Length: 423
Image 1 (cartoon, rainbow, N blue to C red):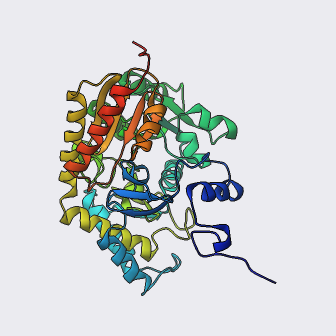
Image 2 (image 1 turned 90 degrees about the horizontal axis):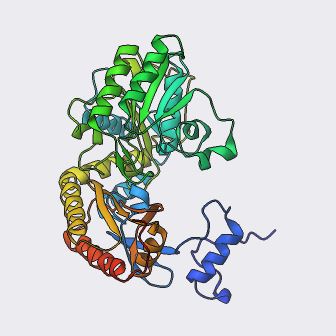
Image 3 (image 1 turned 90 degrees about the vertical axis):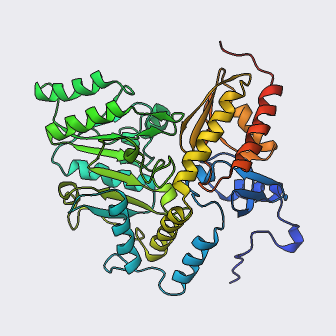
């Protein structure tokens, strides 16, 4: 029996070279239609740039949605993975590996965890949030508070935490007990706890918050709101959980966004995206002994989570961020980019906002999709995250020159775009 498996990125020579059109046609005939038609077929990356199958170059200002913290094909990262592959690729979690332990120790140190804090490794942000949801259930309570506008993933538990109704409706009924509170509304948060005191609602197991909501257009939860949530959780024995899947590992200019908010210290932090810098990896950090002991043997597990290749990829990422001062770079280049856009007084642009290299450019009309498409044609990858905002989450190695190149192209796009403002 013939086995026609090709290990090439192109069809057989008789079919001609791999082009955008040919690979897109093969994609539509072989991959489930969950993402729509690909915008481009990418074949190579280097630093902050990627190339498509037709040879066109793009400045990647999305980095795989805040994943490729070191850009593409970073030599420190790739050499670390290659070396580990030649030593030990995968073992089950019946066994320990030194990279796994070293990474857990590093994350506990960077998170400023208390004595007794522990780490659980996953393969993605969704899995990290699913594990945190199970930790909340292990408190013996089922009521969890989350925020409107929050996105925590698409598995059933993570989807229950996610507020967007369009994502939720096709899969309801979802796991129960989750309530979505108005964004940054401290009165509503306090009222939810008071309802439990009065016996009008169940006790609260956890409050889960993204400190910066990426999918909602890069919206920052205020420090006062986080302080209130932290205080109420402490008073009522609930877990204070921060979803730093998108904001963690340098994205906002510090290892974790909460470290930029004086007085904030969660019980649990969830991570993924930039942690592996492109290698699938997530983590749940329990910052104290109480949270660390919620999941006991048999309560949860993973086959691939924390495997030695993923752990080495993350260790190389952390080392490079520290060695090359990329936390400072994220803060500096992010501020430069936002300031340049805001000072340009461009038509149809409301404001460039965000923190570090997690940025939203908001418009005065629902033109984000058109702006994204036009920028892509000009050689810049961005993301229309809402109808009136594009998101930028570039590699942490982005340079001033590269940021300025984008601002110049963006200025031209906005100055020539024909649109009726909503205001």
